[in-house]
Every structure is written in structure tokens, then in C-alpha cells.
Length: 321
Ligand SMILES: *[C@@H]1O[C@H](CO)[C@@H](O)[C@H](O)[C@H]1NC(C)=O
Ligand SMILES: *[C@@H]1O[C@H](CO)[C@@H](O)[C@H](O)[C@H]1NC(C)=O
Figure 1 (cartoon, rainbow, N blue to C red):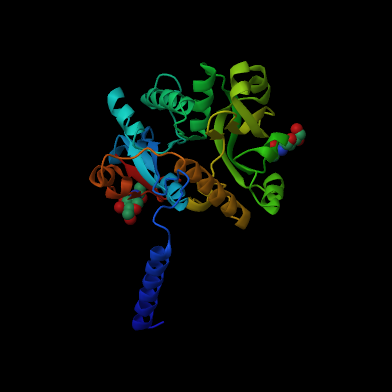
Figure 2: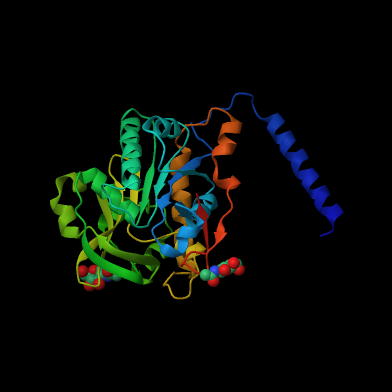
């Protein structure tokens, strides 16, 4: 298409929109929907020697791209702020993701900051102020520690292996999976669509025996670890919009290291896309917002530049802070 042709098309498009919007009634009865969501990501402390020269904390860009692909923007949240500052951030963001990594689930700054947001989110949701939280891998493990009030993890090694999910009957009526196309649900139970990179997890038995955990979360899927232990692999809050996956949906589209079992099939990509859209849609139900556009712009991740890390980590790019 010629440039002139393209600009004519663009003009037509705008003219058309203008007409339509003029024709609309001035007071539209809208549901409370926030179409400019911002999801927070807690940074992780760098522990890997090869990453130390670049910064003290980091966020792999795969998580950022994952959320952006669902229609959200991302705010990186440092681990060095005051409680008052976290309370202020909470009122501005529309959801939180706790990412994978390595950290003490009770004593680390990561765990302490997560606990502040967890408590704020519980109180907000109780008061009808919707606020979703998603935990991936260690993030999910941390959610179980926060809910149970104790660390119930045990060895459930599934390191560098992609697996199908053993879906529970509850998964069919879950918010997270119920709208998936039938073909994908079938693929999810037969094809290795979920990348596992962990040594610890919560055993199914432990989960069922712990009143706090099984009252709080529905178990949507389980898997079997290398040592034979059945572990919980996907969870969803019964009353709260809190979600956890012991596996890594973001790698399916955004990590490509050939030595890792990152699933890249058509169904694996579809799974990753639908879950990103699902969580961002949860974020749309939150009406928290920044004080003004300037404050918002200066808080988002766009002003940072990720570092190419494909030649020394399993990530393609990493944001360092
Ligand atoms: C699903 O559960 C069955 C029966 O408990 C087990 O044999 C199988 O290995 C599990 N599959 C996965 C992918 O964990
Ligand atoms: C990785 O690639 C970058 C950019 O090409 C280069 O500057 C850096 O030295 C490489 N690092 C390693 C560990 O090979």
C-alpha cells in the first residue's frame, strides 16, 4: 500500500470514529471498567553472580511483555520503600504479580513487601475494592505461605520439564479456565504446555489437610514431581481474586533458551495469551489510579531499558534496578 493510500485510510478511520462518537448519547451507562490498567511487579533481589554487575534488583522482561500483551502497563516496585509508600502505590495500581526467583519466603524483603500488599489486598477486597494478585512459581509458593501463615513447602522437584496438567473437576467451573476453548482444555491435559522450573512446592496431601489453604483456594490442577510427590500446580482463591501457578506461563511466548524446555507450540502460546488476558481483565475491575498523568508516566517501566541477557542467562532480556 502506498503511503498516500495508507494516510487516506487512517483519515477515513478517524472521520468514521468521530461520526460514531458524535452519534452516541452523551451519558453512556457504563459498568465500572478501567481500560488503562497498571499491574505492579515486585522486583527480585539479584542472587545470580553473572547478574550482579548490572544491578541489585531485577525483573525479567518476559513478565513485563506477558502483562503488556494482555493490555496492561507495568509498574516495577522496589523492595526498599517504606510501608507508607507501599500503601500509596497500592491505591494507584490495579493488580500485583509476584514473580519467580530465589528468596526466603518469610524473612526476605521480597516476602515482607509481598505481605504488605497481600494484607492491603485482603482489606480492600473485603471492602468491595477489587484487587487481584497473581503468583508464578515462587510467587505462588509465597501466596500459600501468606494464606497458611506458615511455610508448608516440601521437595517437589520438577526442574526444566514441560508437562500437561492433571486438571481437577473444579477447574471446569474456575474463573481462570472456564472460558478456555474446549480444544485447549483437551490439549492442556495431553500436551506438555506448562514449563516447570522448581525444586519445592505444596503437596496435594498437605494442601488438603491444611484448613486455611483448602478453605481459601480451589485446586485447579496437580502434577507429579520427579520424586513421585503429587504437588498442587494451579490454584484460585474462592472468595478473593488471587491466583497461583507453580509453572511459568510467560516463558511460552517470551523465553527461547534452547537448553530449557520452554513450550512454544501453538497451544502453549494460546495458553500463555489467554492467561495474560485473563489476569489483565481482572485488573480492569480495579479502579485505583494515579494522582495525575505525570505521576503515572514517571512510575511505569517504559523509562527503563532492559539489558540483553540471552548470552548469560535463560532470560532474553532483564530490567535491572
Ligand atoms: C496425573 O495423575 C496421574 C495419576 O495420579 C499420574 O500417573 C500422572 O503422572 C499425572 N500426570 C502429570 C502430568 O503429572
Ligand atoms: C553478551 O552480549 C553482549 C552484547 O553483545 C556483550 O557485550 C557481552 O559481553 C556478552 N556477555 C557474555 C557473558 O558473553
